[in-house]
Amino acid sequence: MAIPIVPQLLRAHLAELAENDERHDGRARWESRNTELEIGVLRNAEGSAKVRIGDTIVYAGVKFQIMTPYPDRPNQGGLMCSAEIRPVAGPNWEPGPPSPESIELGRVVDRGIRESGCIDVDNLCIIPGEKAWQVILDLFAISDDGNLFDAFALAGIAALKSAMLPEVKFEMSDSDRPLPVSKTPIMCSYHKVGGRFVYDADGREELGGDERIHITLGDDDHVHSLQKGLKGIFTENEFSEIMEHAQSRCKELREMVHNAEEAD
Amino acid sequence: MGGYGDVQMIDENGIRVDGRGPGDLRPVSIETGVIPVADGSARVIWGTNHAVAAVYGPMECHPRKIQRQDRAVLDVRYNMAPFSTTDRMRPGFNRRSREISKVTADALESVVLLEMYPRCKVRVEIEILCAEAGTRCVGLTAASVALAHAGIPMTDMVVSVASGKINDVVVCDLNKEEDNYGEADLPMGILPNSGELVFLQMDGDLSQAEFQEAWNYNMEAAMVVHQIMVDALKGGDA
View 1 (cartoon, each protein chain N blue to C red):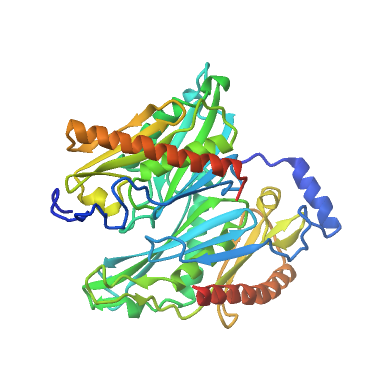
View 2 (cartoon, each protein chain N blue to C red):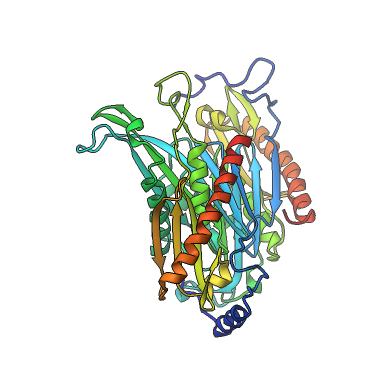
């Protein structure tokens, strides 16, 4: 990613707004932008979802491959999750091998899904030691206006929940079956802007902000992944405040995933 | 993949596997403004093809060595998303996408008034999210709409369509089976206002008469698609 010029004026403006507990687009500190989720949007993917948060738009697609299980885990399939942010997504994203930013994105989303145990890898074994399903979740951004993390995580879990194992295509049975996904891990991201954390930072807040924190919570509020990114220092009190908000927001987003599933 | 002509894809009444007649296009719909952070953008849904194109610029030209003193550089990239195909596509450039990026750039450079922006760069990004057949045509068409949407001056928009031959019958706008098992494929990039061409490829086997028939199908289809492009641009953003 090209390093964008951070205008000092923008930083000063955001700090000034923060003093009055305001944000540049009029949102409250813990308020998100309008969030939309659609599933089953791409025909060639075995599972797919599109998420729009404000002007950030991402797709997630699930594909399956047959893999040879790892020697130490002969009864398990695999999950692979990768994020791609191509230059289509914004003026600062460049072509070439995956940038550190997109690798971090893919890995943080991957951890949240993997560690929640929502995909039972034992269930993906076809012939022990010989054949197993590999689930590949590809995250693809087409418009980046901040908070790609939450958009990717939401699209990712929704795409997995709508995925069908292509047993017909691989001549294994007469009908495809849904990929069993037992939980709905949800990520919430916070950015420090003007000296205090806000939820769902947009592109300008990310540009003029400091560190960020990502939290993935499972169905029972269990914590499955955390990540602190970028330069900055935060306190225990700040973190508890974020965690408290994440618990309520994750419930709302989980509800959104369930509703989209039912509508599909 | 089968050999030529060993899959029956058109019946004695001239009805194709997806129910179309020989001269029929797949359904095409176009929207503009689908990528809010871009300077211009378009989505084209053509059959089950789904392509988005974004335009950024005119902007400062980096790296410096590609800069031109007398005109802008058009930086075109065509790419397929990993989940766009039946079998997962490995991310990153390959020989096919590089060739398509190049011929797409060659076509667009013929219409964009690059000399109006010396030393600048205009980026055109084409992403195929779902592929059926004819993605290079869909991508080029989407890129034209996105350039127009970005307000980049052009002499005309490029409309791209492919016709071909299946079971010895010339048909318009090949779908996936027809592309895989058909006998010929003729993609063209047409300037609808003058009937001139800026993009032409072909592979397969066509007699002179069949070639003319496929050519004519493309010309007729281009006019239909052009109207959809104009309506999308006049209709405002999604």
